Image (tube, rainbow, N blue to C red):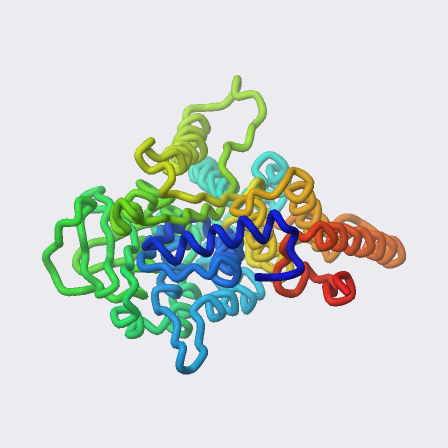
Amino acid sequence: MRADLSRGARRALGNLRRSVTRRPVGLALSGGGSQGSFQAGVLRFLYDEVRVRPSVVCGSSVGAINGAKLAEGDDPGSGRRAIDELVAIWHGLQDNGDLWIADPWLEKLRGHSAWASEMRGRAAEHGAAGSQARVVLRMLGEMVRNPPDADGTLEAVRQALRARSLLRNDPIRAMLEARLVPERIPSSGITLRIGAVCLETGELRYVTERGELLGRDGSRRNGDPVSIVDAAVASSSIPVIFPPARLGEEHYVDAGVREILPVEPAVGLVGASGLVFAVVASAPGVEPIADVENRGLLDLARRVSSDIAPDETLVKDMEPPIGWRGRLEMVAPEFDVHDVLTVDRTLIGASLDYGYLRAADVLLELGDEERMLTAEITRSRMRLRDLEGPVPGPFVTTEPEELTDAECQERRFAELDGLARLVEQRASMGAPLPPGGCGVRTDALRG
């Protein structure tokens, strides 16, 4: 047991370790786009500190990607650990181009001065990429009704109306083909379920560790096995944002359309004596918007279908029936470090560490002060990233704050000093810190 932890943390960690050695363990991994970085941080804590070795992994969307990698299992002979390879994937992401690319029509529109100006004007109200995607759709509708000048933009609008998505997820497929080793999965002994929704039938289905397609009730579908890479791509194909993916003779989209957090299949597979760790990638809740008095039909429809309804699905997934109590441990972020479509190396690192810290706070039942420090440490790292300049997004780039080099350096030194103090305070309380100590040298802090 780690000597640097407080007595309460050591006791709670010991209890958790004993529990996972005596019971079948499952993982239920939610969707959340690139916010799967938080999920990976939680998983690192589960594997490294709790010593979880799951017999069941169920994933939706980015949870399917994380889960497929974990389902490869470990190789004690070589020392290879799936969790190390998963975290390395997330640390290896540099920018948005590592997960998605824009279609040529969108590149054309983004270069149009009127488009860029309009998007910047609406950025404050629609800051999240998902909300910005709805703004894009509305602006396309406006362009159709009021065609722009003949500078090539109209042709881009015509191409957009024939397109199947706003972005392409080719880089996700390329990353999976390069980093996932599907042949390890059937022999790992881990039961895998990857969720995806069939567009033709509207049904939620699952792909098994052997590529078999199952109905929601567990019934086997006809047809040849599908590849795990194809299944993970299908599960993470956010409707409208990314194109549908083909599995067999049908087309599939993100499992989150029907099931964001796959607790139900995980609980069913581990059985009555099992324990499921459910890891939510995105913070629950709906971001408030300004008065809707003058909003039109499309705005109201999008608000309900794209904001409120998905959040209700997540809330229901997170509040399982009474019979599951005692069989479920859940970790979710209190806030999001970055957007679902944002890939930024600094923010990914902060999000990974936030997941680790948050898992420690929740699973070890640490106090309010430790939880407050987790939030303050993470927000400090977010502010440090802000000082580096704007984070590019798929549809709009925030204008950078105009600071002189001297002002920026002064603010950076002050923020780094404050971050070091926060990390030192958490270390002195005997609360777990992630590998790397949140960017602060913990060997000096802990003596």
